[in-house]
Image (cartoon, rainbow over all chains, first blue to last red; front, side, top):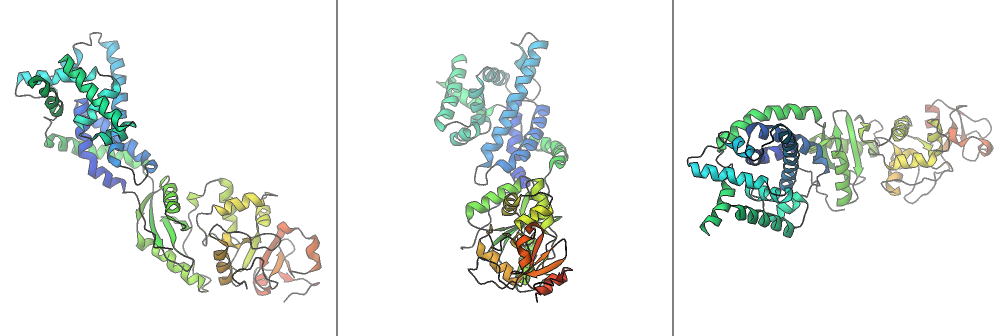
Length: 172
Length: 271
């Protein structure tokens, strides 16, 4: 028998060291809130650790991590929307009011407004399109990686992103 | 068009005003929390490596409690599947130095050093309670003795469980250390072995049984002993016809049988 090579998956610590920065940045950008990002960050790594044995050694870690982070964001903001809908009936104003002054310091008032406005438009997108857009623009994933993370085809990922951008442009 | 371009640029810039220092600061604040939470769900570590032995390459894994895995390597997919299974309960760390001792012990053992296998075994990877019971019991069958699948089942108070015993042994994660090679058919056939019959013969030869490479049955020099009466007999003793096979152990020679506290039969006068 030929000499067997031992191909162990990377230790989880190495994965964490390698990806913690980008995951934190992604969560910050998606949630727009430090406390939310910190909570989601912890949840993401706990969930990733639990699921790590199920990840085959040759599969890609990065889209897998983003998939976990994205799922957690979806759950959190779904719950939050439900909560907000009960407590604050006037949802129109909510996202904008929520964002201003919290984490978004802009030199330009106009630019600041634009960012808030775009965030609002993003939050109105259908879930899949919004998530594809997050992964493309906030995480900087390629379409192949988005497809892996969202468990769809590459064409599908591309379509979701372009639909999302088109909708935002239309309402701009 | 200018306006349209801006949307993409804007998308790329949203949230990006959070500087690297802010991310670092948040990481510093959060890391301790994450580590603490991870500690509660940590799987124990296992040192993993491949060792060479006269029986071929072995995948060895060791926990703090002892040898977890000592598996004959049959191919790349087999190796991968075994590691996947290990990962469900342990975090594998490649550590050839820790596992090397297992290879050295197996080499010495096959060369005839009866006390070479010193490592403890950790049965954490054994699937079912029944399987655990089978492997536990099996460890009381000493070098130089053999037991049948049937007798091993009977020793567990599980009558007619020879096949279940065979299945449990087939999935033994720690062959050699947990001596599943010492289990044979009750009629004297050597039987199968998950690592291949040739390895079973090689192991049994090193334990004092006179077996050639393609032999399918235990040799005539083997004696059998009754666990209840503590009497041992030649293979052709006439009492064999009506003895309860579940109570029988086989020994390489009379000396081994007497070592296990048995006396020779007065009818067939073995040895």
